[in-house]
Length: 457
Image (tube, rainbow, N blue to C red):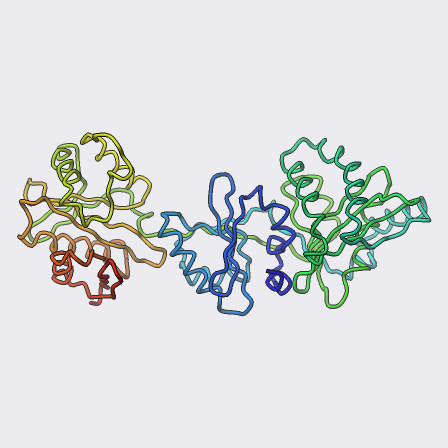
């Protein structure tokens, strides 16, 4: 992945190799190569998130976003993006319109600085840093800055062993996890082409820093110092910039403050040129706007919520193995006992409560005829329709009428742009029914015939 990280001009530290390595186990990080991009998936506090695809050339990300959506639909996972940079928001808005929840947490914003500022700390606004550095040089005139490589792992570990008592004294999970990540990163300094250096006083390391070149920025992943040595932190920051912010490095990214008040104050005192936004995006689907199941009237039918009054008829529909041979979901694969009518009623209610599908009963007068379902809702105003009838009501055209009624509701009430359907190839009656409902053939594979319809068809 090295070319993706080295060529990444997104000003977000999360899109860097060392960041991924340090935090991978804490975020259950996984990755895949998709459409010439690298896509990262993480799990944080029980939720799955995707990062914006890292691309080598402009335009590949759009296809990778298509693949993310398909992956989620096939696995019934909600699409949720994290760390989306501001410069990619136009793509997301165009893709999902305003049907999305957007958050931009202050504590996760990266601090971006001008590299030249850190090399000199010139001007009135940096007088505090200069004073600290001057005091450090006066107290420790024989200090030196030493570049480090993978061959110096042991001396860095010895320094961290001294430092960790202070780090763990913070008593936070984040502090402990960060320190674990630092230890895990050290063996990969050379593999990841990281920049590393130390401040030494009388032959002893008192501070270390590790950074990574990503585009025109140097991401500072690690900066640790023994605070017994007054001024060690600003001295370390300046020496590191002077030695490694070269050859086109314009910015230093010193990552976020994680909401720590002391760290926030310190980072602001270094006068960032920008705080880099990281957007969380939760796209919404048409079904997410539905608060209750509708009542849909067609020429002969009423389509509405299935109630307990019809639980026995619905039980008969669900339990009829012949009826459900081509339904596409077999509850027997997930349930080993003898289910009751209440079991099936609870299932369809939970499906709607989770906004996974809209299961609706088909009624001819007062008679329960079968079920029509709008499901598999996508993120670009599309969904799928399915229907099944009790055996005594087949052959009357009810299935096509119910499908057409459900599609009209989807088009004109939910603003769906495309309704999809499929049927098993041996199920020729279903194929004829979908065609009579106005759906158009949309291809086939070894198992299914596929169909689609838009409001214009």
